[in-house]
Structures are given as C-alpha cells and as structure tokens.
Image (tube, rainbow, N blue to C red):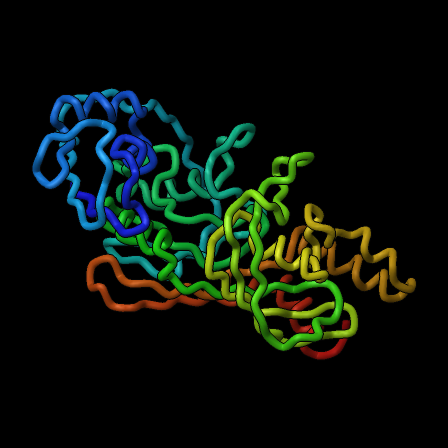
Length: 322
C-alpha cells in the first residue's frame, strides 16, 4: 500500500498520521510496524515520531501478520438507490432517518450495514472494517448524494480531495422565515456546545466553517436556499442557518422544530404541522457533488433531486403557498 503526503499533512508525526488512516490497526500496532520496518518513508526506515513533508511517499507492508481490530457488523437488506457505480466508487441517494456508520447505541441499522449487503464483494477487504466505503458523512435526516469508495485506491484519492477541500458540494435547505439577502457568505468558528455535546455553536475555540448561499425563493413563512459549503464541519449548514436567524424547517436540535408553528395563526399552524408530519425530520438535501475521478482524474458531477415529501414543501414555497 502506498500513500502520498498532501500539503495539509505536513509536519504531522508519522504514527499519528497513520493512526487516522489505518483505522483497522491500533496505534500501538502501527508503531510496531514502523519499528519493524513494515512502514517506510521514501523507501527508508524511520522512527514513529518522524515528521512528514509534502509529497513524501509512504510504503506500507500489509502482507505481514499484525493484529487488526476485531469488527463484526451485520448486513441489512434495506432499499437503497444506487445512482452510479464503477470499479472505484458508487454514488447513492442516502435515505432520511439513517445514520451513516455504527456508533454507541446504534450498531445494526446504519448505512454501513446496508452497504455491506449491497456491496458485499467490493467491501470485503475494506481498509476500515468499521466504516467500509465511507469517505464522508451526512446527518441522519439529511438526504441525497453520497460517494461510496469501493477500493483502497479510490478511498484515499477521494478522502484527500475532501481534506484538500477541492470537492464541490451543493445543498438545498428549506428554512423558516424570509431571507432578505439574495446571496452571501456565512463564516464562523464552530465548537461543541458545553451543555449539549451533540450540538455545535459559534465558539472562540473551534474550527473555521464557511458556507456560500444563494436564495432560491423566499415565501411568506418558509424559504428555499441553496448552500455551497467550502468546509465540511459537523452540522455546518444547520448551525449557519440557525445563527443567521433562519433555522432549517424540522430541525429540532437547532430551533427549527414543531414548536415554532405555535407562533402562527391557526390555519397556518395546521398547514405547517402537516408538513412536519410529512417529513419527520429536518429539510436539508445534498443535491450534487463534483470531484476528480480517482482513476481517470477527470472531473465528474452527480446530482439527485429531493424525495417526494421534501418536494411537497419545496413546491409550496416556490408557488407562494406557504
């Protein structure tokens, strides 16, 4: 196995860098592999604390016996729309209500379990047995385009593009209230909420988050907005909408839940409540993604429209019905 070091990984320790890449191995095992000469940098044996430089070539001997983390995941036969597939990757339309990979309290009913059923042969030797094929994530209730890597080469080529922020993503968000600006940039630093660790917020200590937006249509009560995130922070668009004053419709975690409908007159509240029942989650859809094909190196772009329930609300905004 070969890995080329990108500019964003300069000066990182070798063992630290590889522990995030070779997640099927413990850090202790990675350090043993380095000391035993199973991992070379530019064809030379180095120490575990070796600092990497841009364009360094790392050779990893995966044929020798090392202890892998034991991972046992069940397959799940669940409907999944596969929009495209070749030897390197598949493009899927992620359904609403599905967590991407196993986590504490949820090991069986995730997208990974579905992928193991649909791509059993391709993912049999995945480099990360706990998250086979996964190179990026969407939140549980976010629908739309996802890339699934089907081999090791594709996994690293696509992962590096996400890391280098060269992948172009487009989302559609249905939010509360009327946006006044036609387009703009939302930028802040995001960190975890100390009172609620699953929630993120603007913070002096955190990671930079940047989103471009374009207003599609501002309705009387709801708006449709197109987002182009330039960074990929957890809950980024959801937090940006909330902190800009327009939480995403149905987003209970960030102030866009059903309680907001109580602010309106009876007829409007009834219509909004019907929409809540229809989508049962937040209205954020990953519309398209553009990236460099890991083998041909040509730009490829894939798109998928929102599902029927999402479109019911989307159309109501476009037609001045809500």
